[in-house]
Amino acid sequence: MDTPMMKQTRSGTFAVLLFVLSITRADAHPHVWVTLHSEIVYAADGAMTGVRHAWTFDDMFSAYALQGIPHARKGQYTREELGSLAQLNVTSLKEYGYFTYARAGGRKLKFLDAADYWLEYKNAALTLHFTLPLTAPAAAKATQIEVYDPTIFVDFEFAKDTPVLLSGAPPQCLLSVDLPHQPTPAEQLRLSQLDSDPLDASSTYGEIFANKILVKCP
Amino acid sequence: MTVPMTTMYRVAVVLSPAILAVAVADPAWAQAFGAPHLEAGIMVQSGPMGWIFAEQAAFYRSLSGFIRASKDDGAAMWSLFGISFLYGVFHAIGPGHGKAVISSYLVANEETWRRGVVLSFVAAAIQSVVAVLVVAIAAVLLGATARAIGVTVHVVETVSYAFVILIGFRLLLVKSRGFRVAWRDWASRRAPGAASAASFREAIAFRRQVYRLDAPAFRCEACQDDGPGPQVHGAHCHDHHDSARGHAHGPEPAELAGAGGWRRGLSAVIAVGLRPCSGAIIVLIFALAQDLFWTGTIATLIMGLGTAMTVAAIATVAVGARNLASRVATARSGLGMLIMRAIEVGAAALIAIFGVLLLLGYMASEQLWMLTG
Figure 1 (cartoon, helix red, strand yellow):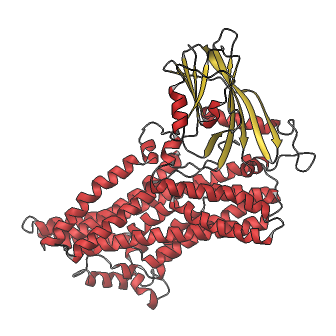
Figure 2 (cartoon, each protein chain N blue to C red):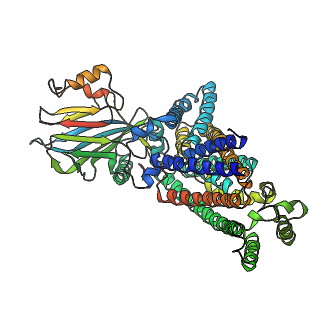
Figure 3 (tube, rainbow over the protein chains, first blue to last red):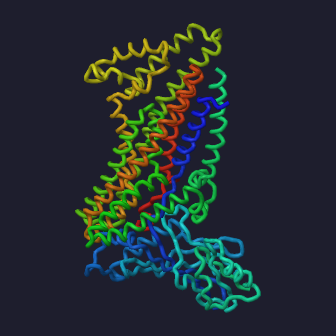
């Protein structure tokens, strides 16, 4: 019963579908890559007080951001010369909530404006350091911090070496960094043993994971 | 007569849920309609779009290495140009409103595929040249900061989106007139008894008005070769259409594809092309920082060439789909014409919607000023 008309219609349907598929995709690919180091800061009483970030930008975006910034020596930028750019960065980032999403005990945590921010330029890359203080210290059993850009203009990736540190956390707190990939059998095995055999604070187990930080404090 | 009827229904039945599903499943649309943000990692990694996404991201990232290498290695420069071309091809498949607007425009205006291809290339060329000009003037001549460049791009982009909206609404106005005419035709055919002579006369008069009002789109292209401009031969063309209307409902695509249409095509292409690609700006400034501005410029133009090829291919598919629908539709004169006019109205509405979404920031994800002011 396949008349030529029906065949035509079918291929036409396919073409229109392809067309619609192609046009409704509006999201782009990342244009900025950030290698991420984060430190979760705790007060003496064991409550989390904030997050300290160090974001290293890729060389292309670093060159873009440095365009037109006056500097004394070619190829070198001092912290002072980068002061206004650092301020601009954190002011812009505020609009996007610093791409940092934190939850503790099932509710969202709010951050104050970034503090202690500065930029350093090394190996053709800019690194932005800044601290996000929580509006109020959070003492929860489970805290989750995610860093991502929902528009994927900026791609965040945890650094290979010690991506996340706990600073001043109670010793029994357990840090893990969530998987973007399916866990390998060995990782899966270690994960299943975490309850009976928790990681110690110096463990670098979290390095193999990416993007989502989990801290459990009993 | 029953075959085209059922196939028409099949098209409708197959298409509507499919389009809906695609629209709902798509993160950008989901976002536009208020759904919560998906995590970046989830939408990146699945399906053919995920593959394209990964490819273009990889190409883009490798550009910096090739630019650095081409400083003292001629061979690396050629690799850079090759990668730039591939990046352009892939970049245009994934994101971008350019091809969406151009394709919708071609569908709404019954353009030929040949014109679609040329318009795609012109749009990509304008886009590359604008990127080069912005960087040449702002960065090279004025030593402007990234913030100033970001603001410039933002302003240019906003103007571009406003133009897209204007073009969309203008087309929507014009095409809905055409739709109303087709509607009356169809209604009077379906119930000839009900349609009084008066209302039929009214329809004819209305249609005349449409042809006169609807500027170059419905007028005179067929008469181009015997006169310098549509204004001079306006009356003659109207006669031509009046006599042709007895058997053909509306002008044939071939009639519309004459020389006079280039001007209106150009407005859409300029609106789309005005907005420079963020990637091109970043690449150009990176090249500039390596004292390789000219290499960066050539790479950007080649990128544009790659983009043009993809956009042209998609535009051709869009025009082909429209022509196919048109062929199916002509089998049923009254209803078919009504459906074709409805498709045109839909395409025009799409342009307006794209423009509004872009202006409101729902579809724009290449926000160059995100980190630098």
